[in-house]
Amino acid sequence: MRIVAIIQARMGSSRLAGKVMMKLANKPVLAHVVERLTYCKMIGKIVVATTNETIDDPLKDYCTNNNIDCYRGNSEDVLDRYYHAAKAYDADSIVRITCDCPVIDPVVVDAVITGYMSGDYDCYALGGQFPDGLDCVVYSFSALEKAWKEARLQSEREHVGPYIENNPHLFKNGSLKLFKNLDQHRWTLDVSNDYELLNKIFDALYRPESPFLTHEILQFMRSNPNLSTINNKIVRNEGYLKSLQKDKIIK
Image (cartoon, rainbow, N blue to C red; front, side):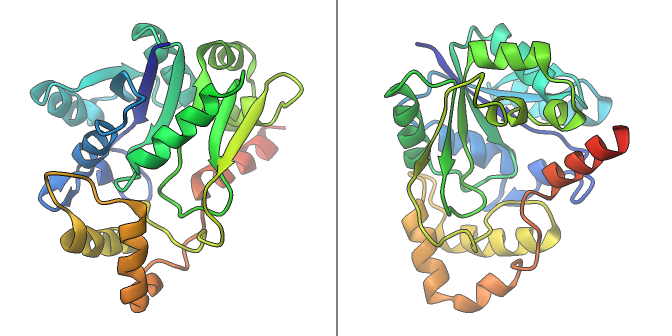
């Protein structure tokens, strides 16, 4: 089975433009996401999926200069971009990763892939009460292709998973609940407050020889409880919520 991690990335974020190339520990966020995924034992290929817009030329250039596979596709239809990227790299299964997760945990990703492979799943995700920023989902190529052909709502095209995840009568979906009572933590990068916190995490924990993992971040946060106030007022999954509002307007 060929398992391909596809990292969606673009420069034109409405909340924090250019965030994927902002520096943490003197490296772009994109570099950290790719680097951390290289420690996954279950992933056979890592691909960055960006858009064909001129604004994303720097992402393509960075990938080219650093020997990172890159696919360019539709800027608004992320499902279409993922489908064609998966097809271009002959993926049997696709691990969806977003480039706003610079502390993605390779151990967690491998655990999710292992769970996916343990059953005949179409979709298998990290579930439960986990810190925002560890998000990962595995899709079968057949499920992704079916969604690509049939999804109609804007929320189903702007995001990869909703059609699959919201139609359990069509797909076998599952999840791995590794964490409890940790969903108050926010380690993703959407706004400047997130960047402030992530800088502190990387300044304290980053080491080039191996990735720092979830338990180390949790220990750091426990030792510095005031840090959680930096970005704890931000709405989780705001982008998807906006897409759902668009669905209502179109209807």
